[in-house]
Length: 203
Image (cartoon, rainbow, N blue to C red):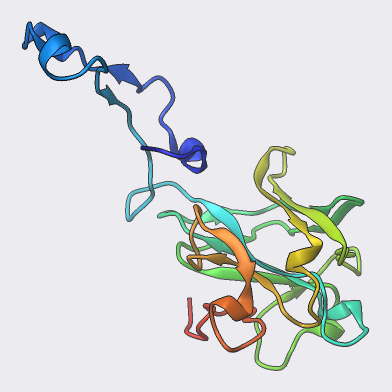
C-alpha cells in the first residue's frame, strides 16, 4: 500500500501491471482477481537528488516580538541543493529571497528568522530579507519555491499547531520528507530546536 505522500518521489511513467496470469493460467480463479503493480520511486541517498523540505516552523513566537518566528529547511536528499533566488512565502507574499550562491548540503539545515534580533545566541541562521516572516497564529501557508516560482515544498498549518507561545511545529519523523507536522513538545522536552534536530543533536 502506498499513500499519496509518496507522489513527489514517483518516477513518472514507471507504473505497470504485472500480468502473472501469463505464467499461471488459473491465477484468476485460484489466487486473486487483482494483478500486482510495479512502480519506481526516487528516495534519495548518496547518489540521489537534492530534496529540501520545510522541517520546523515557529509561528507563535516566544513573547511578543515576531522577530523570533522562524522556518527551518532541511535537505533530506543526497545532493547539494541550489537555493539561489529561492523564496520563502506566507499567504500574504514573499518574506525572504535567498541570495545568489546559496547552497544547502545534503543532511544540513538552514533557518530563516523574522529578523536578526530574534536569532538566539549560538544559532546559525539568517534574517528574512523582507524584515519579517509575518506568520499568522490562526493558521497560514508557508511555501518554499525555486527561483523560477515552482513550489519545492509547502505546508498549510492550522491554529492548533500554533496555539502555544514559543512552541514550534516539527515534522515527525524529524527531517523526513514524508513526516507530518506535530507540536515540537510531542518529540522532545524543548519547545523548539532551530538549526538542530528535534532532540538537540546536530544535522
